[in-house]
Length: 345
Ligand code: NAP
Image 1 (cartoon, rainbow, N blue to C red):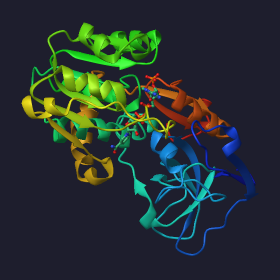
Image 2: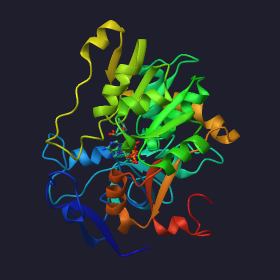
Image 3: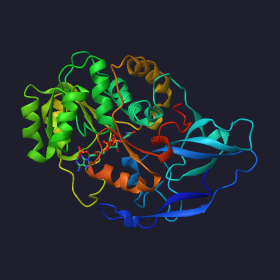
Image 4: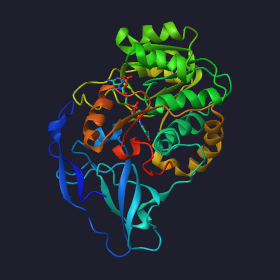
C-alpha cells in the first residue's frame, strides 16, 4: 500500500482547447476515514467529454484548486463502518485521485457477472453503455429494420450505440469518425455498414454517399455540421437523438451551423435530447439486455485503456483530440500486471 495520495486539481480556466497547464497533481498523506467512512484505493477511472464542460466557469462546474470529480472503481483498503468491508470493490464519483474517503451512501456495489471485466462497468455496462441504450430504446424508440446514422461512432457512446443497434435489429448502420483507422475498426469490429471520416469534406456530401436513400434515426454525439447534414438526410418521421455536442466544447466562440428548420415540420421529425443521469431506472434492464450477449461473445466492450494514474490528464486531453477508440479508461498500474491478487482474480 502506498503512503501518499495523489489528486488532480484544475488550476486555471481554459479558453478553447485545454492543456496540461490547466491541471496540477497534488500530493498528500493518505486520508484517514472518520467513523462511518472507508478509505478506497481507486483502480479504474473514467475521463469524459462532460469534464471539458465542467472546466468552464459554469453552474456546477469544477472549482479551481479543488479535487476534480469523476466516475471511478476502487477497492476498500481501510474501513470504519460495518457497511463497507475491506477488499470490497465499489463504484463511486470521487475520481481523478488515487484514494478517496467514502461513506456507504456515496458508493454503489457492482453486480459481478462471470467473465465480464471490471472495466465494462465504466464502458458498455456503465454510464456510456446506458447512454447508448437509452438513446436507442427510450429516445429514438428504434424499430427493427430502421436505418441509423451515428456521429463520433468510434467513441465510447458511438461504439456501444452501433453494437446495441445491431442486436436490436437495426437496418443499415452508418457512422462518422475522425480517421480512416477508426472507420476501418468500426467496419471490421463493431458491425457498421459504412463509415466516413468527417475531415474529408462537407458532411452533407459524405453522408449522402454512405446513406444515399436517407436515414430514419440520427444518434448525435457531435452537433454542428453533422447535425445539419443529418436533418437533411432524415426520412419522414425521422428522429434525432441529441446525446452531446463535442464539436463545440473547445470552440466557445464558434457559431454552430444552422439546420433547416422547415425540414423538422415537413418531415415530421422529432428531435429530443436527454441526460443519462435521469435514466438510472434503466440500468437493470441494460444488464439484462447486455450481459448475456457479453457472455456469449455477441457483444464486446470497446475500450482504450491507459495505464498509470499519472497519465490521467493526458488521457483526458487525448480523448478530446480523438486519440481513443471506444471508451477511454485509465487503469492503476497494479491492475495491468498479472497475478497481483487484483479484483479480476
Ligand atoms: P468519446 O466519443 O469516446 O470521445 C470523444 C470523441 O469525440 C473523440 O474520440 C473524437 O473522436 C470526437 N471529437 C472530438 N472533437 C470532435 C469534433 N470537433 N468533431 C467531431 N468529433 C469530435 O466520448 P463519449 O464519452 O462516448 O461521449 C460522446 C458524446 O456523448 C459527447 O458529446 C458527450 O458529451 C456525450 N455524452 C452525453 C451523455 C448524456 O447524458 N447525454 C452521456 C455520455 C456522453 P473522432 O476521432 O471521431 O474525432
